[in-house]
Image 1 (cartoon, one colour):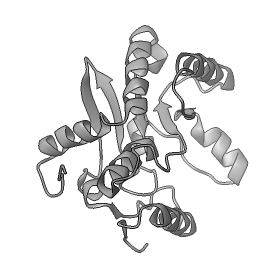
Image 2: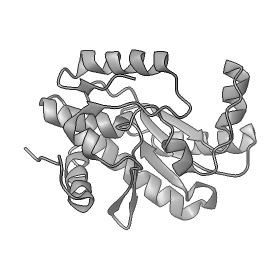
Image 3: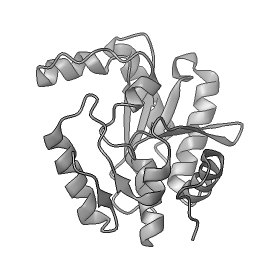
Image 4: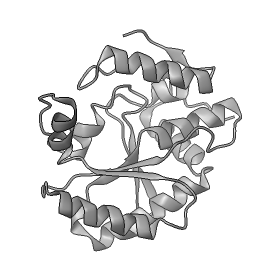
Length: 201
């Protein structure tokens, strides 16, 4: 069993890579996206993040099937073109290229999230300045992790580090997130992965 707790970030990234590479669906997704990004300048700034990453790690430490409980893979990118049409082209293009992988994908341009989010929820959320800015606001530290491949090397964005993932600690990130949503999500995860330790809001 690979233990990434309380190691240096360089060691943790290597352990994360070893664990994620056990998830064949995730690895194939990363390979398709790497090739796509080389050909599409609008998709250069991207990551796969959230549940597909942290829940793969949770499954490894629980001894579950590596894809247990993973609803979809979150693919996020940042394009200054805020039009629905530009995003829709990329969504449909990627869905076609990823159709051979037996899972679902949630593909979003983080550059236009504030538009539909504020319309849907009646809020006044600010525009994200980058895909990294968006990932940094995803409600829990274990969720705020993005990965991608560059020349077959795993590149990781983890603004709150990786210790919480390896320690299976659910800790709130209160930027653009509410207590009720955090508690609901944390309790739902705890039902699926009983070893999780939840930090109160």
